[in-house]
Length: 452
Image 1 (cartoon, rainbow, N blue to C red):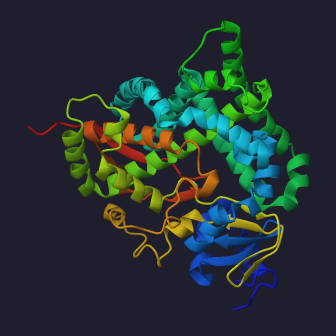
Image 2: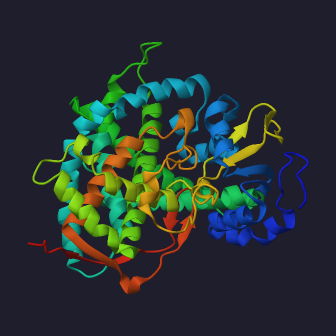
Image 3: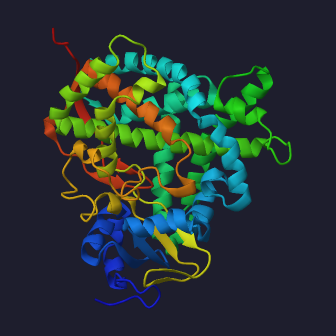
């Protein structure tokens, strides 16, 4: 097996990358998994035009994401490609600016803040479940689309203090999916940039982005004009000055941060909830255990933040679902300075991909990784063998809010409804920025008759 002169790791030959380009465009994770099984947990390849190191070894992930994280910034994928459509915000900034934004925005996701937000979430859930029940009367439903609507409603309400309209929800959901697919093309085929420009694809997708941005701008302007004070994250951002200068965020910065929170919050919760319901439909033996736990823990008591986190079996089911189908299947970093991990040389400028899906399926840490077994999480595991929300200082700022949303909607659906896949049809994966189903996830859903 040839060694890369750059990194001293197994190297995927260029001819293989060219041969696999079409498959990479359809779903990169399938190609990455083939390479992982052939070349091991650390290998290099040319991703686009850059030499890239793909890592699913937990020890190296801990080194890159935590122990020496100062040497690894977000890669050119984030700071050049995604900035074009997202602007510069918390998810794709670095250094002092990132730390400044992180400190301010993290105030919206403290335990006390989430406890305050929970009644808002419960109100959204009640409205969503009424619509959900109505949908069950019309035959099989696409459960993924339902989770998109729920999380957009939930995140939107937490951000803006009021639910987004159905028109806004559908427009925003479609815009996210369309732009993500286009960004994957631009990352995998950078040599086609002139084609994208000349054929008007760039202009077309920027128009979609601008229309989505306008939804956010309208909410911000409406809040400013009304003069009303909301108990939501938008109000927190508008009212909280930076500690170092005493200045407030500019309107442009507010728009970018709200947009990134809305997209990231929706995508993570949607994907995790969708795949959890899918796994439960395929493995219904876990449903009764979850129902018994909900009855034992909740009974007739109102749900609060503490009760949610007492649903230990449901949490293990969710963890195992996120292990098998992690919402973020990969993240990206770039080495600032020359570095070394063991005998691996990492020159400055090297793109490093923490390959989360590979780490979650690494046989050395997860025996029989394709088997769905929630009891794996009764045993201590390497902390960087399971990183559905990333790891180190840049761990997802909204992970606790996402978990709250997912636990709320899953526990409610499981308690009140029976569901099964139409024709027990297996659903494939499509890996864009997140790990999504490769098509509609159709389920038959019916109101459950409780046992006496």
